[in-house]
Image (cartoon, rainbow, N blue to C red; front, side, top):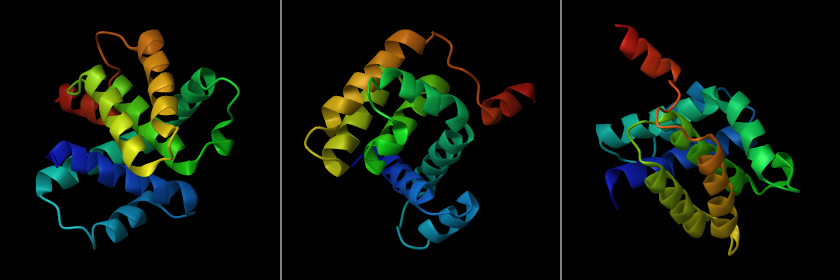
Length: 150
């Protein structure tokens, strides 16, 4: 498995834990990395995805709600909801990941961890988000802004 694919899998697992537990994100991160053995590149990318997604939930969740016709976020399967959050974060805030890759990686996560209909559901919503909201310049995240301000 490629490094970034593995990092997305780890980020999804951390997002899942953050969604179902009432625990601080830093605590989830600390507990999570006690188990899997991963390279520093994988850990770094997974952590960026995890924290970036959490930091942007206030804009990501309404976007998902808007494009998920007849679906309430809280009624979605926890795994589907977090794959959508991760995919939307990458689509909107990661200039280093092409949109097609974001969507394909999310679909693969859905096939691996979701139910038989998850991949179609994920594909439809992320494709709609991409078509409606993706610009040639992804929005800057706090980390990107800090780095570009130096």
